Every structure is written in C-alpha cells, then in structure tokens.
Image (cartoon, rainbow, N blue to C red; front, top):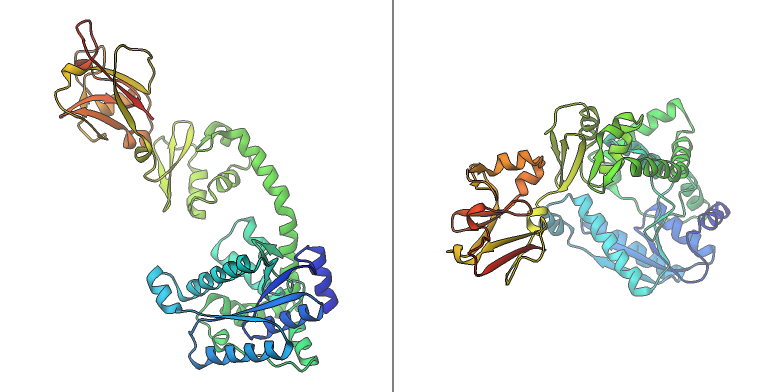
Length: 419
C-alpha cells in the first residue's frame, strides 16, 4: 500500500522529498495512516491538529492522543483551539461549515508562515465515492462529478488511491491505535447517511462500488479540460461582451442549456433557474431572473447579466465651467449657467419623471424617452438624472433639457462629464 501511495504522489506531482509537508491529523484512522505512511516514505513533515471543542471530553481525548503519537514518532506538531460554536453563530453558518472555515484558514496561515509545499489531508476512495453521491443528490454540473482533486489550492490528497479498508488493514498490521469520532455514527449529516445507509445498499448490488465510483470521478476529472475548451470556444462565438449573450446564436446551438450554465456558473443561479432561462429563449422580452448577487434579463435578442446595485453606484459626473462647447458626445452635456438657479443634484429615475428634450417644446416622460431609445429594463432602473431644483436637466448619458440649453445669449457655460 505504501508503494501505491508513493506512486500516486509522484504521478500527480503532489509534493517532493525537498521541503516541508504539513499534515492534518485528527487522530482518526485515516489521518493517522497518512501521517505514518508519509513518514515511512521519508517526507519532511509537520502535523497540524485542530481542537474544535464540539464533543466535550472526546475533543480533548483526540488532542492528547495526537500529541502522544507525534512525540513517539518524532514528528513536530502544532495544535490550535477554536471557539467553533461562537464563530458559527457570529457568521450565521452551520457548525460543520464553521469548523471547515476555521480549519482551512489556520492551515493556510500555517502553510504561509512555514513556507511549506502543501497541506496533506487524508481523504480516500470511500470519501471520493461519498462526495460524488453527495454532489449528485444536491445537483451538480460536470465538475461536481469529478469529486475531489489529488491537488488543488495547495491541498494534497495522497490517499485517494486507496480504500478505507486498506487503511484499516494497514493500521492493524502495524498494530497502530487510533481514535474514533462518535459523531461519524450519527445520521444527522447527509454524508453520514450516505456512508452508513446508501453505500452499503449499493455494495449489495456492486461489491466493488467504492472503486467504481472513485474511478468514475477520475474519468470525469480527465475529461473536464476538453469539456471546458469546447464550451469556452462556443461561448466566445455567441458572446456580445462579458455581460451579454446573443439569443439568436443560442437558439442555433444544440448546447444552449450547457452554455448558459457555464456562463452563469459563478453567479449564484440555481440549476432550475438555468433550465428555465434556456427554455425561455423564445419568450417575450422583459423576463428576468435573480440570484443573490446578479440579475439576468431577456431583452429582445439578448440575455443581459448585471451585478446587483452596480451601475448606478459606479457612475459619477464632473461639473466644470468652460468658455465654449468643445466636444459633443453622450458622456457630456452643456448648460447655460445663468439659467441654473439651484445646485445640480443627482438621483436615479422614478415613475412620473419628465423633462423637455433638447430641441423640443413639449414635455416627455423619462420612461417613454428611454423606451424610444430602446433602453433595457436594467438601464431604466439605473438611469441617472441630473436635476436643478425639481427640474430634470439631463438624462445622464443621453438627452439634456431644452430649457437649460446654451443659446446665442449664453454668457457662462457649465459642462457636465460622465466619469
């Protein structure tokens, strides 16, 4: 088994014999086996142990066991105590998530402070199989089917090539003790239900289920670069820019649903929303969807993505006095200073706003004007207005008001410029 692990480390270039390797050690069978195998293979190690104080006496028992083990084996050890319940409450997250965040934050801090190669953790084939099933249950794209990677973000998993039973057999052969986390036998967590109930039932159908599922992850993992290359190439063909997709091009693609999923994968939209978006390409304009961070609008022949509360906050206007009109562009507007009887202020458009467009005599609702110029729903909601008192003097970036125009009698000019 040690030879299998050695080859796996070398094949996947997890780390080398030169330089420090940090090892997460809980005291359980998996992490104890990892620590001892790496020591026997001759790597320079430092063990890390977290005490989350979640299991009363058990937590302290585990820490004492790891301290004794490392002392006996001559392996340097760092321990860290966490107030996990308090952290979970302050961050409004689950205990499980709090423990994970605390653990990895400390791991990375220690990695940096010690200039180590990586942090080795003890995930094995059974964990990989559980992860695949867990991702399937929660709903996942192709990346979720790849499970855990041998090395990612400086986290190395040297035991992904062996099963839990191989680990137990190894510890039995060398007569090495370990501690058992009693919460692993509780069915509150979904992963425990998979381990204790679902995998044994699948093993009754396929006795080799652990290797089968783990091998499936490896195959998918190897396929992802080809999948990403293909989807990225097709996405580039239908992108108008980073925040817009061309619907006509999407309709012609056999892979519209996949392309939409890839485009939105980091934007917080759910799988059901992605499916609804793909099915709405022929629907009426104006339909939109929201995630916690983004909004997506179907506007005529475009899908438009917008980060929430972004555009209006990032738009600024500079005011200055000039002697003459030097440039005409959507980002500038000129006004007769003597007609401005109050300071210029700014706000976004609201229902009922009106102005007298430059060159016209009659009023026009700002909303009607924006419709005429084919502004999207998002653009209407974020449209900035410049006001003098109660009067709208500029639909910023578009049309100024005729009442405040520069004419032949103007003596002083004010210029507004979008930055």
